[in-house]
Image (cartoon, rainbow over all chains, first blue to last red):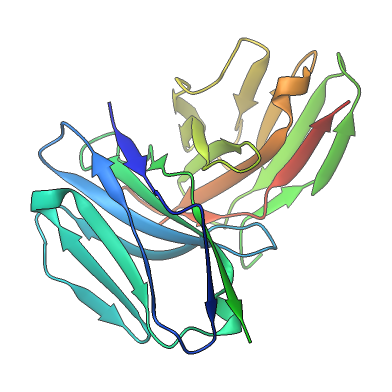
Length: 116
Length: 113
């Protein structure tokens, strides 16, 4: 069975601080996808990134960066120079890479509050 | 429309009442999913459609839950004889193909009293 653990329930930072959201996963699949989604107060899940298990290269997109460590089954997300608009619940998710890749297993989420 | 649209946004149902939740996916999106998100939890998979075919309904919690997508576009999630434990946000998502990202709607918050 697949499992995603986001140990940080809530994080509070002051604007311009860097913040890292942790994600640890468990799967028996040899190939899989990892995701991060943002859920602002409006409720919809906003896609941030999808990473294939074959690709361990770290990725940077503006103020966002992701660190995939297959050896420790972790896929951490860092926001650099945080802004108030980054305040949201962030979910890490996992799916198999085969025919059931539509079925995402989500963590419980981390509530990030960025204070001005 | 530009995104996935769900209606109603909020629904209060009395225990035992039947409810129907609607999802309008992005035009042309072949795949459609329903997820259930309890308060303070991550979304949990309910069911998956490819066009009008329901290919996976393994996540539906009981036979009181039923989903359909008769013309391969709009989908309806129906819950019969609602119970308090059905209170949650129901999220719908759609995507164009097997390897593309899924776009989620804002969800329907169901409260059973």
